[in-house]
Amino acid sequence: LRSQMLIDKSFVKAQIDPRLYGSFIEHLGRAVYGGIYEPDHPTADANGFRQDAIEAIRALQVPIIRYPGGNFVSGYNWEDGVGPKKDRKRLLELAWWTTETNEVGTNEFADWAKLVGSEVMMAVNLGTRGIDDARNLIEYCNHPSGSYYSDLRISHGYKEPHRFKTWCLGNEMDGPWQIGTKTAVEYGRLANETAKVMRWVDPTIELVACGSSSSGMSTFADWEATVLDLSYDNVDYLSLHAYYNNNNNDTSNFLATSLNLDQFISSVAAICDYVKAKKRSKKKLMLSLDEWNVWHTVGTSRAEERWQIAPPEFEDVYTHEDALAVGCFLITLLKHADRVKMACMAQLINVIAPITTETGGPLWLQTTYYPFLHASIYGRGTVLHTVNSSPKYDSKDYTDVPYLESICVYDEEQGHITVFAVNRHLSEAMELDLDFRSFGEVSLIEHIVLEHEDLKAVNTKANPQHVRPHHGGLSVLDNGHVKSSLTKASWNVIRLQ
Ligand code: AHR
Image (cartoon, rainbow, N blue to C red; front, side):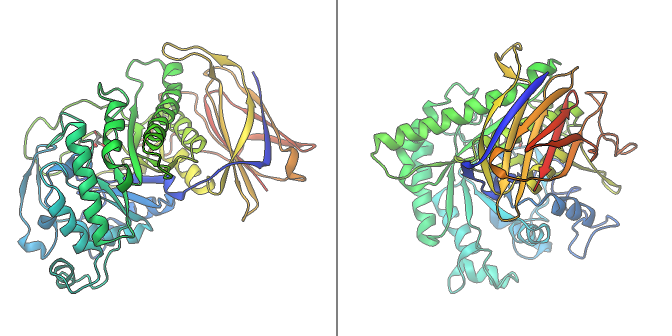
């Protein structure tokens, strides 16, 4: 199996927005309670935050984290989560049929986000609420002082405004499962008016309108066109959500689902440009893939017993092949870095997440932690257009799937070049020729590999390091070329300077 990449440093495709490596924490399952917040845990700090989780998340260098939902936000009254904890209400939470204790709310989350070095991507409730609460919330969060809500924040111990910059206008408002689901016209009008008014409170913010919940929705494409027709001038991003799984146990097909993601992104960009043309607008709308991941337990309904507090939900255990799929998704995001400016791996801890904790017990890293870690750390700078050649295969749903999925990122400031590459072949190694023609002399820093004999291998509490990367990848320099051997079904990070 032979493949090639021609890499030229002057062929710059896009500057990578660091927010491509964002993530998501929702009041769902054990993400907040038992995940980031567990006051009785041996590692908890004075505010109840698990420090083992802080450490694992900080290491990922996640620039932005979406909060508080997700479906949760569509029934959330933010006022219930601020002020003295002793006064906070326990409420029935209708998105997931649990009891919400409100011990963690906007201010606690802002404190926690600082500890992990992330910005907050806030979402407003456009399910049960609307313009009025959105303007109050932004006044509470971002206005310095001298008004009712900003002074309320100060009275809660937060003298400095949070200055949250990025705001989602609701969540998946096209979905019938959503509290307060809407038609495209209803939502488009509401998103537009809410955006307008929020910007009057704080003109520095950026706003994300809801696209479809997935490309599989029957209203997909019409939804985007209608919503943007009604809100184009007042929003900055359109959201996309995409989850994949291998529930049919067809790994070759599963690893090709990044082609679906690629097509989805291209289609949404085209719809944005259609509306731009229609409106004769100068503004180019950017995309926010603010939920993406492998999700095996998707569609399983809420916890059987209603109104539990933080019951375990969607605790997917990720396999080696899931890590390869995540690697392919990350490469796909990078290929679209000219258009996708924000993306959130959904989610970050315990709920469809790369990090798992046991309540009262240890934390361990899932297989999918590693490609995300590598992309986040080394995938900064610019994406280069490369000319790739690779043998291809057909799978159940996709044709011409290249065995090589790859991208090159150049960090000019550091002088670092990184090639991310997945060998999709399940039984053969691939010889990859990297031609660095324009870079002059390059030297190899390392070749990191995530590989495993067993595609279904997972990390567990008992064996937390069963699947983890090593630094012994086979790459050699050869006259301006790097010759790499990519083992079967592997994720590779080849770093040069
Ligand atoms: O990430 C889990 C859920 O998936 C979110 O709450 C919702 O937006 C999506 O359907």
